[in-house]
Image (cartoon, rainbow, N blue to C red; front, side):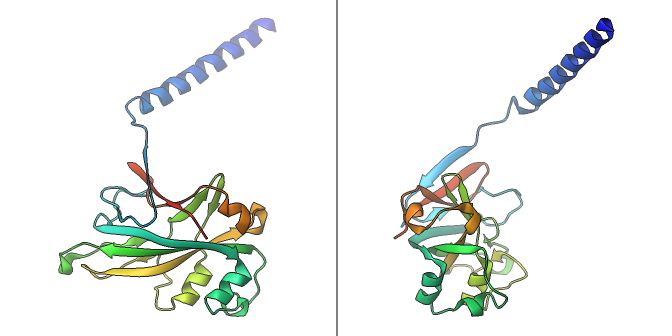
Length: 204
């Protein structure tokens, strides 16, 4: 019985060693992700950086974070002339606060006939010391009804720029509030690979 147990243990060790060796081999040539942090007010170019798909066509796009505010959701909606009933006809039970960032997005592409560039609204989010705030699309679409709700690829004409306010939601289970968020280090995440680009956001 002891011999059988020993054989099973040895087999498990060999198996785990093989898996560990395989993981090491796959990652031995992998370069660590470089992180670049930019201040508000500076234009940041995407270049070859992307979120999860290297086929993303946004190398000609730049973005600048102009300003930011964070406040309870009702106060924020009042400030932009909206009501909860307009945004959530069926009621809002999760969003407690909004961290809103005004950004200017620029498309530097000069090839008007072959322009497929876009700004990724889907993956853009706020990282805040352990928390992650996603785009609040119900507020975004109510503020900008002209946006195409079937896609989060926001596009502007080549050679132009557009200023838009991006609202990010704070949910009740995250157990934080506007005053606590102001004391944290907050970053607007623009890309993940090969360079992780972020803009430090300092909300009022």
